[in-house]
Image (cartoon, rainbow, N blue to C red; front, top):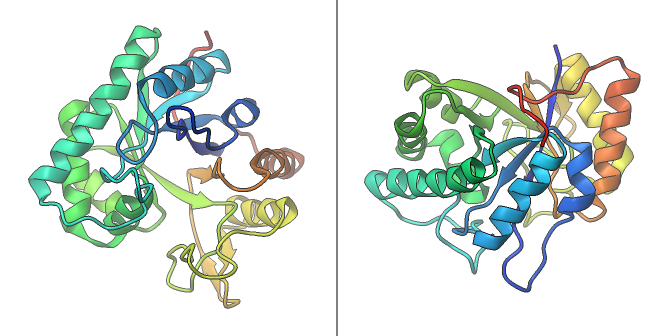
Length: 256
């Protein structure tokens, strides 16, 4: 089966650039685009949609907590109704830019603290799934492999995609190692490529403490703000292709 390679993008804001979107876009198959809550702004959204369309990359919505100062990496105390409305709002915003560019959204992947909370807390996972389902039952909900977000998506009648990470370290319980701890991000592209190949080909990932865990993934993430992210993406793509593993988006997408 082919594997999707995704990246969180469109996270610049005004005059402040973040990430390496232009260099990364030709190397990935799906883009998760921020919508102004944790990062991004309308002009950045429009430009990122156009860049993805130019390269035939699938468009995904990347909703986060309304926390620009904390980049969506801090937990906020929101009710289920507030969270559902916030996610629906962000999907609608990006869908407008996609439609104006002659494209459609294929998937939704939460960001940062919202993603991590939804992995293990139904009080976050279920409102996210409801918001996606209310907008369109055709959208794919992307979540951490083996997480409660995928369960909530299936219960809502959505197609789901299990995500694994090439550039991030794992803990022995299957969660991502906190960015506040040493070793959270792999130090070089070769390590990321080896982890990607282990996940896709062997169905295994080695945690930070050495534990070998089983994992099944439909999509691999490379973060655009990882230092030298394009080198990571090139190494991952080369490792997969050298192993005879096809790289393709989660859903068909037309090139501009």
